[in-house]
Image (cartoon, rainbow, N blue to C red; front, side):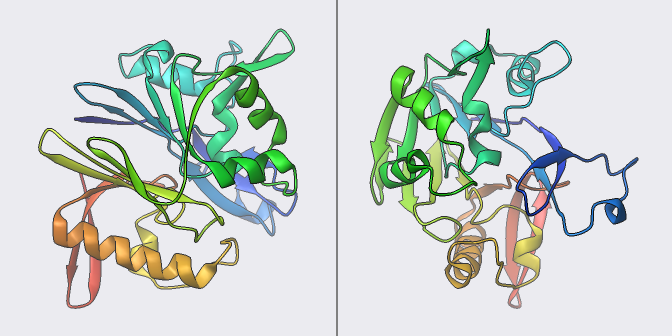
Length: 256
């Protein structure tokens, strides 16, 4: 199993929920009052049978009008057309924007050859247009033109890939456990988005169920430490891939 970090950069986001590129070396946080500052890291996993994308970033383009995500996949040595599975933790825009690409004024799936694995009720909620955190046109495009395998609750998608309905960050959020070739990788999406959330306990207002999300972070961290799972941190600023140690009721995250 090979893991590649497809870093899409740093952004600020305010109450308008618009993501604005933020360069920590040039831009000042004080110039963006009331903003959250996040980092976006989709992941690519190569196994003997699949090329897997874990969440899809914001879908921003480079100066050549090409998806940053597509370019990062090429930089890793693959073509976007090689993606066989897209595993989605949830469908907030900063995770789902890269699922589609605009060409000639029309949206189309970014990974037309891939199967998209999505919790059914998460997709239905995103499609409903009831929350500005979801961009309805993305899901309309996927519904019309992409292959989707809807899952519900917990289960095994295929040998070596388990999904678990977690429901902390969004109501139908899911996490993934991938085990193959003697290696084990856990992707917690926004239930365990960065190592720092293991190091300090808090309840986040941006979670659908903050108390549940806080409890899940600790639960997943302990499981990773006890069973030797490598964790992928989607919103990590520095350590996007790491192993977890838990001693004396405290976590340590070791970059890998």
